[in-house]
Amino acid sequence: MPAAVRTRPIHRALVDKHLGGAPHLRVVPQPHPQRPAPFLKWVGGKGKLLPALRPLMPTGKFRYAEPFLGGGAVFFDLSADERLEHALLCDVGRDLVGACRVVRDALPELLAQLQAHETQYLSENEENRALYFYAVRNRHPGDFAMDDVERAARMLFLNRTCFNGLWRENRSGRFNAPHGRYANPGILQSDKLSAASAALQGVDIRQADFRALPELVQDQRIGFVYLDPPYHPLSATSSFNAYSGGQFSGKAQGELADVCRRLDRQGVRFLLSNSDCGYVRDLYRGFEIGTIRAARSINCKGESRGDIDEVVVRNYAN
Image (cartoon, rainbow, N blue to C red; front, side):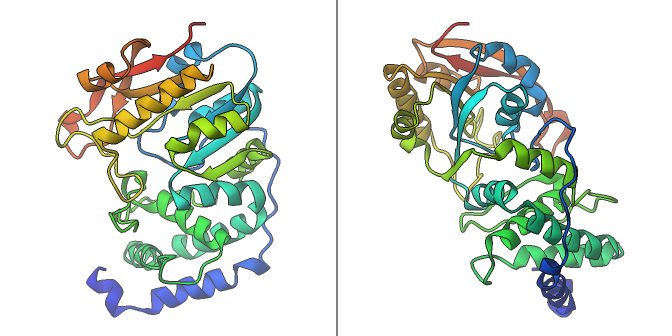
């Protein structure tokens, strides 16, 4: 914790005061003419790659599953185009799954909490904004009693005010990205949340590991699965994949390939994205493997950013 936060506990009291009073506010969701889109900024999000991914999708409508949800760009795009007969969304991240459920089931209460955060944060000068950010960050659900709405509001607030919009957890599962110092971060975003909430109605959202996918797919008669796992690193330091307090190892990549083979035997179509390297290509030998160009932007060195190839693996042809 920065020294400034330790010497100024008033900001933790402000968090308690404003969030404690939030439920009496009633922020009514507004009409949502906009197309549903991710409400969280997420490392590796597929928003910019949708034009390249859409032609690879099966045609028509289908029952859909996505086991590495992240920001959910592909799900929201398919939902907006009315392609989904049913959707199952999974992730191992407790906060991510909880936030999606709250957006689906308790949007007015969430908007009230976010309004409280926004009002307090934007009223402060730059120094006090940082203090407020770290007070919220250090108020971890493992240390404080926190209901699902407050926990979701905490995640969205931190995601929208942290450096680079990076949701990063350490091995203890604690969010540890620093303050972002944006002039107007757009904390509430009620229109975007309203559109996302409408898209999530009736969707099955679960905290589940990808290894449970074959059984879930069978139980829910899923016909198409999109998989966007943490990418296999191209070098020892080139890939950030600690989404949920741990690393997605080479062994896990192999287990995921085994899951895809099980899906194939079950007659389920799948599309998978990953980094373009020999290890990944070897894992999926026998399936259709193509490439798309993607922008790499999560790097502290500007010269290391730019377009790179990603592989897309399918067990079907359009």
